[in-house]
Length: 98
Length: 420
Image (cartoon, rainbow over all chains, first blue to last red; front, top):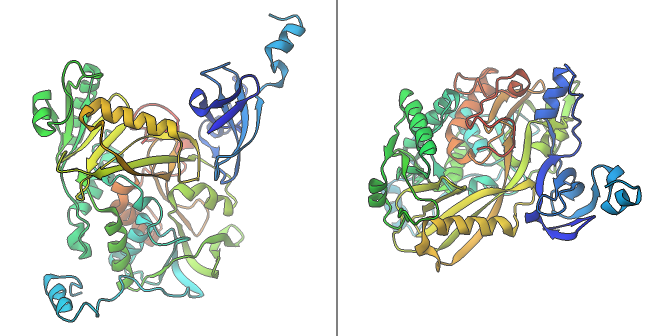
């Protein structure tokens, strides 16, 4: 299985760390909504078909990626940076950030 | 009930040209309604049907299987049976299973080839050995057999194992459960299927559930590829497919991820290892089948999958781990590999419960460990369906335990769908 990292290009799955269901929302750290915390920690969407999931390119650029992958075929239909606001080093440099 | 298979029936049928054997189960068409529908014709579903009929006298039961009987995990596992857990809830449940295993061939009148050849967990660090001593003591406290072994004893038991100081991860001891072992996995499915069938259960193959019939919240039956079937009680025992089946009932999220686990078998060898051995510094387990092939596996591929096939990094990892323990196997050829879809729960323990909807019963979350649980899973699930409440053995295995802070986390690792 190859994942095409937007920064590094196509790389073997062995370079990536899987972080699971990308639909979960982490509650505000100060939140005392136990149901929301329980759902965040334990509950998962587990579809047979397209799955929105998070991977980290831990053996490469270390970026966190949002991947849409079909769990029946392992086919990957999209890969994007999780946070669009620092999509590349080039852009950060262009904006004068280190 | 007179034994259908015996030395006498073997001889009598041999003399008559083997023309009079009955198929082990019928191929009935589905009826319009049943008392109980069990979704999933794997080991757990078939065992549930068998114990419903035998222990509770409920025989108006259908088992619905989308493919052929035993086409899922009951025929894809590495056949190990053990009850070497740390926490009492797990130990009691798996020990109940072990006791059912010990009489299963006799009970089913079907040779499941249960072989109590032992299961040895290797320790490679003093801390790990201490941990095994703790687990062994916990087991013995609850009446389960466990013994610590020294490297010299281990070498006598498994001569091919590299226990030298120059091994990549030297073996410093191990935890042995002698009553653990292996069984012939297909025979377990076939034996339960025949036992259920002969008591009147309809086993309906090639019948995929496509939806649930509802009366408000209550589940009143299922839609299938062979028409609608109504039932007073609908039981779900679909292992790796739990997520997709529960979505059909409108339940989107579960404390479960489906992952692919690969397994491997080598060409046949002469007797090489007569126990089940597990590696403590990675994740690897191996035994030798009666045909002579080494049957082994390791870790999950590590991402959600319903594909029943895996990728190469895990193949490489498993082979490396095998050679770290058994350098002498370097030139043995791998014959086959395959994948099964595991329903990985967030605490590594199963779920056998009433609900989550009225009229529904749920059996899932088996992680890697479903095969050894087959008899007790069916026994407890049948009890839960028949009496609308759990037996003491499965009372801790609720679905809501995750939200109530009552997780059964045998490894003490916290919430992750990678435990077993």
